[in-house]
Image (cartoon, rainbow over the protein chains, first blue to last red):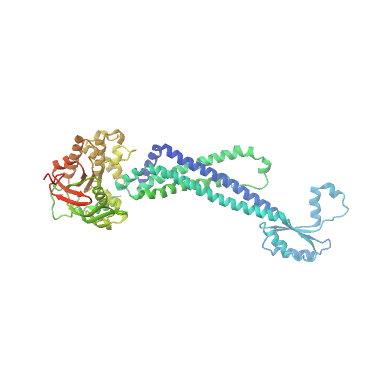
Length: 289
Length: 262
């Protein structure tokens, strides 16, 4: 019965204050649209940097006359390393096959197989490359050389940490900014109606009785705003994005943003929370009658 | 629901006298006084003295005027009764309850038992006359069936049976004030306080409102009315409490607006 009353009061004031309703909804819409774009972009970039990091590997080349024993010993040593995510043994024959596929005319002229046996080790993260390389120092018997992309590693690591920091900082700033913006819009609407609130209190309405419809209003604005934001994001993804980004880049590289459903869910949750909490917190000042 | 109504009534009204009509103007000594001010001082920060050592007692069923120039402390006094303000010192007792000891949570219940009428009506602008009156019942969680019955009753009592679905902007000042009186009494509160209810109305309309308040008092509700309306006070010959610069300077059983005229 009380819920019914809350809803009727909330709808009455929503339709009675069309301009503030629209303003609050648009504020949520803009905030949530930016947040959504941001989450999609940020998670895409993070996934890209993960991908690049994943392509880094340490290679251990053996001498031509390395014994299987020596190779096994190095293999055991690598397996014991927690930083090594995956270890693959590429025999000289495998290496030749691989090369034949990539550069057939080069291989055709070879009289014997010049390629050594090797281990390819993928690190858990970019920063582990050097740890793995350092573990094989001094070079164990039978090993010809240990190589890893030193410069690339460092660059990727720097870029990734910068991206992660920027992503986090921007997300926090965006959330704070949209909270303030929404709280401000709600404050204006509540300020315009502070006399009404005073009257409610004077007739003996409890704080929750006054707050209920207002919070419901905030909730409804949050809902409308975030749903519109989701619709806009969906349209943007379906129609605008393919024109901006050629499919070759966005395609099969294994780099992807978080799923649209997840982003939509986050937006909806944050929008609702901002609406209701914004109204509830702002009201506190006006309830002290 | 029923439970909360019971307790809300209990805040002000001892069960034995619930709904019992008292003859107006009489002060039966044995009953709990409705309002007691005991040496009440209210100082607004930093040093504006709004009320200074005010002491008086208003018995259950009385009709009392509170007179005095603007800024003499009338509104402060009324707001103390609603616990909108806290006294700087002294005690305010309403219906046997000392407000200083009343928990914050119980303030809404206190206010449901004290009807208020204001100079500026204080109606909810987006609600019709009916809804404005109903709101006072809804906040108590009174069942809808009862609301549908009581609101038209009280609106016809104030003479607005035909204007129930009008919005405040569609009503005259006198009609708006009638809605506000209806809202104040629809709970059947034991106490009604009015802050210059006729301040914005022409003399004829004012008489109508006064008659209404008088009738409500006849039905047993204690009425305390702050006013500037000299004619009205002189005509009614009721209890007059006069304030001057925050002090009670006169308190007469059947007084006039000014002491000199007596």
